[in-house]
Length: 368
Image (cartoon, rainbow, N blue to C red):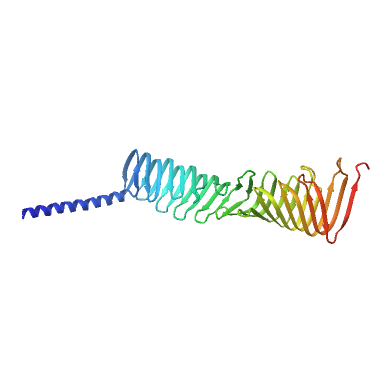
């Protein structure tokens, strides 16, 4: 009987120990809703009903699936708030965040980063998209990122650079927009940049929409309008709202521009409705030649116009100044179909007017 009693006592002791251990582990889990990997120093204080954990030096811990590194962290365990300082790094799936200071609000799944912030998103093809700013808010559940103050963004895959005062990015949709003096650049050998009051991008820069006070500029030209649509796959841009084109050799206006690019240079331009173009043969000289029509199409080579075709209510004036090899001439003509061919020096080689043609041709010999 005594042996049986002893056995029961031992079994009861083991069971009690196991139950106590479970409660102890549960209590520790409640006390620490995070997994601490490393800290040089740990202090736990209880203020009223809340435990506050202070971690110092080489801090490394997990809070849920999110990994954190920093120099110092204060964890408010009841409120589920973590305040981190110094070389803060946050890693979650394809997103990494770095900043001087980070506040993490577990209940709302919101991270507030401030001070030299860098957010890096890794694409499925291993290319990256980065955001630099003074402040960034990131919402984990909806995967939304808001950046403020001196924002710089870069997409390696599409080779896009952007700057602005405020940026919002919805990661699940691949949609974002830039505001407060935004500038977006297609960064290749010959950069084309876009500025506007607001610039939106869809499907990871496959389509870009710019609205109000839009300017597209490169070292060769400036285009302005109220509205711009850019399609990356087609390298095509559509300009609406009093579009204007200005370069050293030509100026143009119309109701609508359709511009096709190749390696960041204009390959073709189509102007629709109320088209007007004036141009010169030499840079920085008055643009004395002009043409109007219902529809105009221009082909470009290395930034120069090589071919122009105008149709519908065409009127034109072409003026060539006298040189050592040619006389002065001026040609005023009207018709329905105009073709102009130019050489690689922007000199007119041939003018052809068809259908209902009439006009006046003037010339003057240099010795007269």
